[in-house]
Each structure stands twice: as structure tokens, then as C-alpha cells.
Image (tube, rainbow over all chains, first blue to last red; front, side):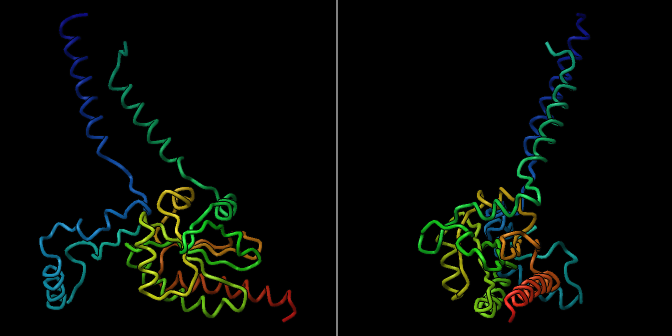
Length: 78
Length: 177
């Protein structure tokens, strides 16, 4: 096997390994498995209470709801 | 030696994806049998099965204390249960919380009168591969699933109530009431 071909095989193997590593991070979470995801601690904001109040007056002021993302509440039901 | 490692890994991914799609996929026919056969835990910690209510129309609601719509829905189901229980139908709320104590604490706080059982996330929920939380099954007097309701919206609750009322009407008709 020529040196060039060996290098190509090694590169392909490295790419496949990287794909495996990245792919391992993907998982389909079924609705009944979301207990930990629904935990309030999973909210990234430091103070969820403040965030909720800010969102409420923002929604009231702008006359729209949900423009900044999905509905909150930590349900993760579906 | 594998001559084409990229293709081999891609093939492995495809196989894994396909097998994942098959796992936990309960067919419509065996849902009734699985629901009736599974051993559940009562509030007192005693084992039981849904077969304990043979002959009654059952509304089996899968819920969790971490699911906000479930908590709202349970209040409605509790009211309906009080209305139905003397007529031959009953709501059985099966908790899929991993911690039984948390589910029972919620039920006690809300003063729920309906039958609360515990199963956890790896029991019937996984066996039936619940498509949503909450999911509710309406079982007729023979223990056959006649309706699956996903979610707890107004329309879903209406469908559930209609199904139970229809089953009760049939029951009364047969009994000559």
C-alpha cells in the first residue's frame, strides 16, 4: 500500500471516529424520560423568578407572547 | 481489515438507528394485555394490577408530578371520578415519577380521591412507549383499550369524557337501566 493511500485510510478512520464521538451525544428523549429535563434547575437563568416577571411585562408591553422562544414552565411533556 | 472504515461506521449508525426505532413499540393489540398484566404499586405500597377493577370502565391516566399539564388535568379527572365511580367507571392515575414518595405527596397535597398508583418511568410507560405525558387510555368493561388520548387539552378531555359516557350508556342499556 502506498504511503498516500495509507494516509487517506487513516484520515477516513479519524473522520469516522470523530463522527462516532459526535453521534454518541445525540439521543432521542422520550416524553416519559424527561423528569430530569423538566426539573427547574435545568433553567439556565440565574433567577427564574425575575426572568418570569420580566417576560410578563415584556409580553404585556409588546402585546405578544412566545416571540422569544417556546412556552416555559419546565413541562417538557411532549 | 475493514477496507472502508467510513462505510462500516455509517452502516453501524444506520443499524443502531433502525433498532432504536423498533424498541418499545407496543402494537395496539397488546396494549390492553400489557396494561392489565403489569404489577403496579398502591399508595400503601401494596402490589396490584388493573385487573382488580375487572368489570368497571377504566380511565387509566399516566401522569407525573413534574408535568404541569398533568397536575391541572388530575383536578378535572378527580371531579369526574367522583361523578363516575357510582356509575361503574373509575379513574386510575398511574404515576411515572421515579420517586414514589413525590407522587404520593402531590396526591395528598391535592387531596385526590381518585385511585393513585405508582409505576415509575421504566414500567408501563416504556413498555407502551407513551407518546406524550399525560397519556390516557379508556378501557371498556372487558379491559380492552377503546381510546388513547395524548395530552390534556380541552378537545382531548372532551373526547375522553364522551368515550366514557358512551360506554356507560351501553352498560346501562345492557343492564336495562
